[in-house]
Length: 241
Picture 1 (cartoon, rainbow, N blue to C red):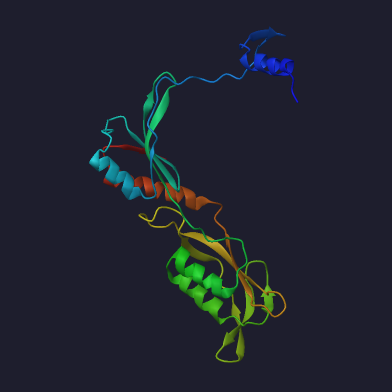
Picture 2 (picture 1 turned 45 degrees about the horizontal axis):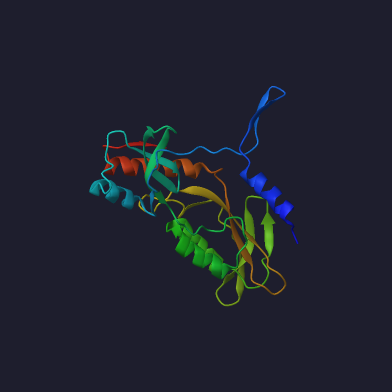
């Protein structure tokens, strides 16, 4: 049990005034210091589409429309409408932010053909390559994949033909695909992927995997596309990204 002296000592520590001291040519504080904000700002609205930004500006909901507004394309999945630096802290007011909530394809992970086909149908903008991959994945035998040739880029594996005939087929590589990775209002960036197949565990289905092969260049394309989309619809507001 704590006696009165101990409690009093704790109270004195808590209530002690902050002191600034010079030690060894450096300035120290006995307590952490925080800036007291004297220019409160509104919490930014949040949205998940670019269309919401356009609607907000068109309706001029918060009477925020001013010549010095700026649309900042922060990355491929985030855009903020900000005002000029102001107040004693020189901060920018963020009026609204569009933040994409996306379910991304698990690149680099091995998947059974059935799940792989479903992911291709739901997480990619359809093109000829997605159809080709779906057809290839659905034709692989349930037995372990027999790799007849693999030079690190091209694979030749056994796939099912008809009821029981297995044929040697070249794995399509590289492939150009458009996964959903940015706002749906714009054309999804096309980029290169490496498609790999491998055998599963004993008696299990073969496995498929897609590996990104563009070094992230698609992100630059996405930002440029978002900028162009916004400029076309809101020409009076500056857009950077």
